[in-house]
Image (cartoon, rainbow, N blue to C red; front, side, top):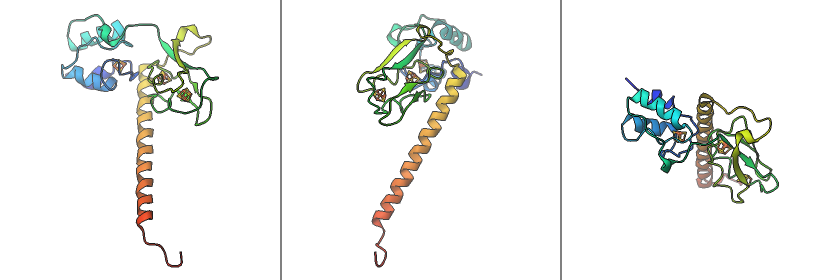
Length: 185
Ligand code: SF4
Ligand code: SF4
Ligand code: SF4
Protein backbone atom coordinates (compact mmCIF):
# COMPACT_ATOMS: atom_id res chain seq x y z
CA UNK A 1 0.00 0.00 0.00
CA UNK A 2 1.29 3.47 -0.93
CA UNK A 3 1.94 5.75 2.03
CA UNK A 4 2.47 9.50 2.44
CA UNK A 5 6.13 8.69 3.13
CA UNK A 6 6.39 7.00 -0.27
CA UNK A 7 4.95 10.06 -1.99
CA UNK A 8 6.97 12.51 0.08
CA UNK A 9 10.13 10.66 -0.93
CA UNK A 10 9.47 11.65 -4.55
CA UNK A 11 9.11 15.38 -3.84
CA UNK A 12 12.04 17.84 -3.99
CA UNK A 13 11.67 18.99 -0.36
CA UNK A 14 12.20 22.67 -1.08
CA UNK A 15 9.04 23.46 0.95
CA UNK A 16 8.43 26.28 -1.55
CA UNK A 17 4.60 26.03 -1.26
CA UNK A 18 4.13 26.56 -5.00
CA UNK A 19 1.98 23.42 -5.09
CA UNK A 20 -0.58 25.34 -3.06
CA UNK A 21 0.17 23.42 0.12
CA UNK A 22 2.23 24.39 3.16
CA UNK A 23 5.14 22.21 2.09
CA UNK A 24 6.03 18.92 0.48
CA UNK A 25 4.55 16.73 3.22
CA UNK A 26 1.09 18.38 3.14
CA UNK A 27 1.06 18.00 -0.66
CA UNK A 28 2.04 14.33 -0.27
CA UNK A 29 -0.85 13.81 2.14
CA UNK A 30 -3.29 15.53 -0.22
CA UNK A 31 -2.07 13.32 -3.06
CA UNK A 32 -2.53 10.23 -0.92
CA UNK A 33 -6.07 11.32 -0.09
CA UNK A 34 -6.78 11.85 -3.79
CA UNK A 35 -7.47 15.51 -3.12
CA UNK A 36 -4.73 17.00 -5.33
CA UNK A 37 -3.62 16.57 -8.95
CA UNK A 38 -0.14 15.18 -9.51
CA UNK A 39 1.05 18.14 -11.63
CA UNK A 40 1.45 20.94 -9.11
CA UNK A 41 5.17 20.81 -8.21
CA UNK A 42 7.25 23.15 -10.40
CA UNK A 43 10.62 22.35 -8.76
CA UNK A 44 10.08 18.66 -9.48
CA UNK A 45 8.69 19.28 -12.95
CA UNK A 46 8.08 16.51 -15.45
CA UNK A 47 10.35 14.03 -13.66
CA UNK A 48 8.40 14.27 -10.42
CA UNK A 49 5.07 14.11 -12.25
CA UNK A 50 6.25 10.95 -13.99
CA UNK A 51 7.35 9.38 -10.72
CA UNK A 52 4.08 10.29 -9.02
CA UNK A 53 2.08 8.95 -11.96
CA UNK A 54 3.90 5.62 -11.73
CA UNK A 55 3.56 5.35 -7.95
CA UNK A 56 -0.08 6.41 -7.78
CA UNK A 57 -1.07 4.76 -11.07
CA UNK A 58 -2.56 7.94 -12.39
CA UNK A 59 -2.08 9.40 -15.89
CA UNK A 60 0.86 11.79 -16.25
CA UNK A 61 -0.16 15.39 -16.89
CA UNK A 62 1.74 18.48 -17.98
CA UNK A 63 2.81 20.76 -15.14
CA UNK A 64 -0.04 23.10 -14.22
CA UNK A 65 1.19 26.60 -15.23
CA UNK A 66 -0.95 28.07 -12.45
CA UNK A 67 1.61 26.59 -10.04
CA UNK A 68 4.62 27.88 -11.96
CA UNK A 69 6.94 26.76 -14.71
CA UNK A 70 9.83 24.34 -14.72
CA UNK A 71 13.04 26.33 -14.98
CA UNK A 72 16.73 26.21 -14.17
CA UNK A 73 17.78 25.68 -10.58
CA UNK A 74 17.90 29.00 -8.79
CA UNK A 75 19.76 30.30 -5.76
CA UNK A 76 19.23 33.41 -3.67
CA UNK A 77 21.82 36.16 -3.82
CA UNK A 78 21.90 39.02 -1.32
CA UNK A 79 23.11 42.46 -2.39
CA UNK A 80 25.33 42.89 0.63
CA UNK A 81 25.73 46.64 0.07
CA UNK A 82 21.96 47.11 0.29
CA UNK A 83 21.34 44.64 3.17
CA UNK A 84 20.36 46.45 6.37
CA UNK A 85 20.89 43.41 8.59
CA UNK A 86 17.27 43.23 9.74
CA UNK A 87 17.33 39.40 9.82
CA UNK A 88 13.78 39.09 8.50
CA UNK A 89 14.96 36.63 5.86
CA UNK A 90 16.27 34.15 8.43
CA UNK A 91 13.08 32.55 9.88
CA UNK A 92 11.37 31.87 6.51
CA UNK A 93 14.33 29.88 5.14
CA UNK A 94 13.31 26.22 5.57
CA UNK A 95 16.89 24.98 5.47
CA UNK A 96 18.67 27.77 7.36
CA UNK A 97 20.76 28.68 4.34
CA UNK A 98 21.20 32.34 5.29
CA UNK A 99 24.04 33.38 7.52
CA UNK A 100 23.87 36.59 9.51
CA UNK A 101 22.64 38.28 12.63
CA UNK A 102 20.87 41.49 13.55
CA UNK A 103 22.72 44.56 12.30
CA UNK A 104 25.10 42.40 10.30
CA UNK A 105 25.38 41.78 6.60
CA UNK A 106 23.68 38.55 5.53
CA UNK A 107 24.86 36.02 3.01
CA UNK A 108 23.47 32.84 1.41
CA UNK A 109 25.18 29.48 1.78
CA UNK A 110 24.96 28.24 -1.79
CA UNK A 111 25.55 24.61 -0.83
CA UNK A 112 22.30 24.67 1.17
CA UNK A 113 20.04 26.99 -0.83
CA UNK A 114 17.17 25.14 -2.53
CA UNK A 115 15.95 28.13 -4.53
CA UNK A 116 12.59 28.10 -2.77
CA UNK A 117 12.32 31.92 -2.91
CA UNK A 118 10.70 32.11 0.53
CA UNK A 119 13.27 34.67 1.71
CA UNK A 120 12.55 37.15 -1.08
CA UNK A 121 9.21 38.64 -0.04
CA UNK A 122 10.08 39.30 3.63
CA UNK A 123 13.10 41.48 2.73
CA UNK A 124 12.05 45.09 3.32
CA UNK A 125 14.67 46.54 0.98
CA UNK A 126 14.32 44.04 -1.89
CA UNK A 127 17.98 43.14 -1.81
CA UNK A 128 17.51 39.39 -2.42
CA UNK A 129 17.51 38.24 -6.04
CA UNK A 130 17.03 34.74 -7.43
CA UNK A 131 19.60 33.83 -10.05
CA UNK A 132 20.32 30.60 -11.95
CA UNK A 133 22.70 28.43 -9.94
CA UNK A 134 24.66 27.71 -13.12
CA UNK A 135 25.30 31.42 -13.70
CA UNK A 136 27.58 31.69 -10.66
CA UNK A 137 31.22 30.74 -10.75
CA UNK A 138 32.42 27.88 -8.54
CA UNK A 139 28.92 27.12 -7.27
CA UNK A 140 28.60 23.89 -5.30
CA UNK A 141 26.10 21.33 -6.58
CA UNK A 142 22.46 21.75 -5.54
CA UNK A 143 21.53 19.97 -2.31
CA UNK A 144 19.66 16.69 -2.64
CA UNK A 145 16.03 16.20 -1.61
CA UNK A 146 17.25 14.00 1.24
CA UNK A 147 19.53 16.77 2.52
CA UNK A 148 16.73 19.34 2.15
CA UNK A 149 14.38 17.19 4.23
CA UNK A 150 16.98 16.63 6.96
CA UNK A 151 17.71 20.36 7.19
CA UNK A 152 14.02 21.24 7.18
CA UNK A 153 13.37 18.83 10.05
CA UNK A 154 16.32 20.30 11.97
CA UNK A 155 15.03 23.83 11.26
CA UNK A 156 11.59 22.86 12.61
CA UNK A 157 13.12 21.27 15.70
CA UNK A 158 15.15 24.42 16.42
CA UNK A 159 12.10 26.64 15.86
CA UNK A 160 10.02 24.52 18.24
CA UNK A 161 12.77 24.58 20.87
CA UNK A 162 12.98 28.39 20.60
CA UNK A 163 9.19 28.66 20.95
CA UNK A 164 9.24 26.45 24.05
CA UNK A 165 12.07 28.49 25.57
CA UNK A 166 10.17 31.75 24.88
CA UNK A 167 7.01 30.33 26.45
CA UNK A 168 8.93 29.17 29.53
CA UNK A 169 10.59 32.59 29.89
CA UNK A 170 7.24 34.34 29.60
CA UNK A 171 5.71 32.08 32.23
CA UNK A 172 8.65 32.70 34.56
CA UNK A 173 8.37 36.48 34.08
CA UNK A 174 4.62 36.43 34.71
CA UNK A 175 5.16 34.40 37.86
CA UNK A 176 7.92 36.77 39.00
CA UNK A 177 5.72 39.80 38.34
CA UNK A 178 2.86 38.28 40.32
CA UNK A 179 5.03 36.99 43.16
CA UNK A 180 4.89 38.87 46.48
CA UNK A 181 7.90 41.06 47.19
CA UNK A 182 10.43 39.53 49.56
CA UNK A 183 10.66 41.23 52.99
CA UNK A 184 13.16 44.09 53.00
CA UNK A 185 13.19 44.28 49.21
S1 SF4 B 1 8.86 21.36 -3.75
FE1 SF4 B 1 6.99 20.77 -4.80
S2 SF4 B 1 5.81 19.59 -3.31
FE2 SF4 B 1 7.42 20.68 -2.19
S3 SF4 B 1 6.41 22.55 -1.49
FE3 SF4 B 1 7.42 23.03 -3.46
S4 SF4 B 1 5.83 22.68 -5.01
FE4 SF4 B 1 5.13 21.70 -3.11
S1 SF4 C 1 18.17 31.25 1.03
FE1 SF4 C 1 16.12 31.82 0.32
S2 SF4 C 1 15.86 30.72 -1.61
FE2 SF4 C 1 17.59 29.77 -0.52
S3 SF4 C 1 16.68 28.08 0.64
FE3 SF4 C 1 16.72 29.84 2.01
S4 SF4 C 1 14.70 30.83 1.74
FE4 SF4 C 1 14.99 29.42 0.04
S1 SF4 D 1 15.73 40.62 4.94
FE1 SF4 D 1 16.97 41.69 3.40
S2 SF4 D 1 17.80 43.47 4.47
FE2 SF4 D 1 17.04 42.07 6.05
S3 SF4 D 1 18.86 40.86 6.60
FE3 SF4 D 1 17.78 39.71 5.01
S4 SF4 D 1 18.76 40.35 3.09
FE4 SF4 D 1 19.35 41.86 4.65
